[in-house]
Amino acid sequence: MMKKFVLLMIVVLAVSLSAAAEENSEKSEFLFVSNRDGNFEIYRMDGEEIQRLTETEADEYLPFWSPNGEQIAFGPVVDNVIEIALMDADGSKVRTLVSNGAFVQMSAWSPDGSEIIFEQDTDGEMAVFALDVESGEIRKILEDESGTSGVMWSPDGEQIAFSSAIEGSVDIYVVDSDGQNRRRLTEGRSNETNPIWSPDGTQILYISGSRGNTDIFVMDTDGQNVRQLTDEPGFDHAAVWSPDGSEILFMSDREGNNEIYVMDADGTNIRNLTNHPADDGSPAPRPVAVP
Ligand SMILES: [Ca+2]
Ligand SMILES: [Ca+2]
Ligand SMILES: [Ca+2]
Image 1 (cartoon, rainbow, N blue to C red):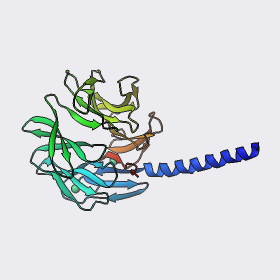
Image 2 (image 1 turned 90 degrees about the vertical axis):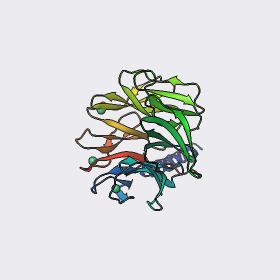
Image 3 (image 1 turned 120 degrees about the horizontal axis):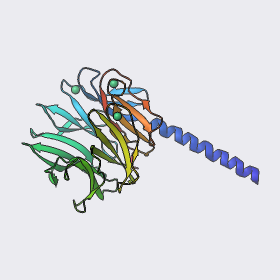
Image 4 (image 1 turned 30 degrees about the horizontal axis):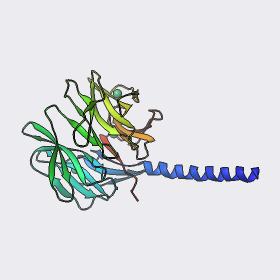
């Protein structure tokens, strides 16, 4: 009886180990931008394999997967401003979503994939908008007198995190999805920006620093339990979670040029994923497909 039990344990362990190995190979699939072919294009890295998804004379920046992994929103530069465009996951069917001559910067998809949040600068007036991907309708979700950026929905869609200088220094705030009940999460003297909810919604990743050196931090969603994950000279930023929350991809110039790195969620085991003399950045891990 005991022997059977031990045997069963070994089988269970073997199954879970092979599942973990499969998961690891999936986690290495991400989008990024690079100017390795002359100007900025969107690339997709899957393990060792790199596929170029755009090929234009202009620069393309900031790729974002739709939550179901079927489409990619990105920011092409047209007439010196960044617009918002959409393509299928293989780079086909490129179409423009927002093109109005103003500077627009996408920050997130809504968790259900129906809307894209972006910041727009209209003659020096910044505001945050949500674009309905199907209908093309645009609604304003946050007025902005104080440099609000990096607007990001929580995974359950109930809250919105962003950075803003509402109270002087740039800090991270959370509001309910209707814009009410604002809470300030950071109070550092440096700038805290780019909040990213963990996939389970319990933690927020963010960037803090100034004067040529930024680093990556994580805190609980009430602003408590702050942990510093990187501590190197230079810019460590553009940090994002892997879909299962076990790893963090980020961008750094610590080795002299911009590269994409991955680390375990506790800041250990840092590895360079791009290793290329060109500028590589804006990592976007492929989401786990929703069944
Ligand atoms: Ca290009
Ligand atoms: Ca740093
Ligand atoms: Ca590089």
